[in-house]
Amino acid sequence: MNFAVSAVLLFSAATTALFGWAVYRGDTSLVAGYDSDRVNDEAGLARFVGRWVLSAFVTTTLPLVGGYVAFTLAITGWPVVGTRRFED
Image (cartoon, rainbow, N blue to C red; front, side):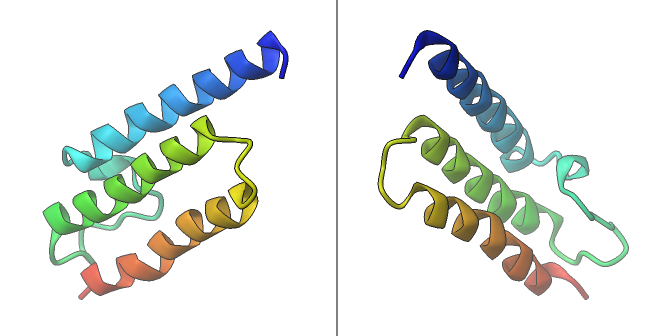
């Protein structure tokens, strides 16, 4: 892997970690499709989505793992399904 690719992956990982940490700490405005009228547990939603975004950080730092694509699809798809439990 050359330097440019490594730098882009590192920047992507750092940005993902920053957003994941912000959501985990309670900034639900960063969650796509967030509607405060439909959510009954905002803190639970923030922890749930933040945890999954932080796990995406791990996958961007390990791009040579064989199941990278499958794992990335899983960790981006599961929050879409899992956030429904926080709706009224």
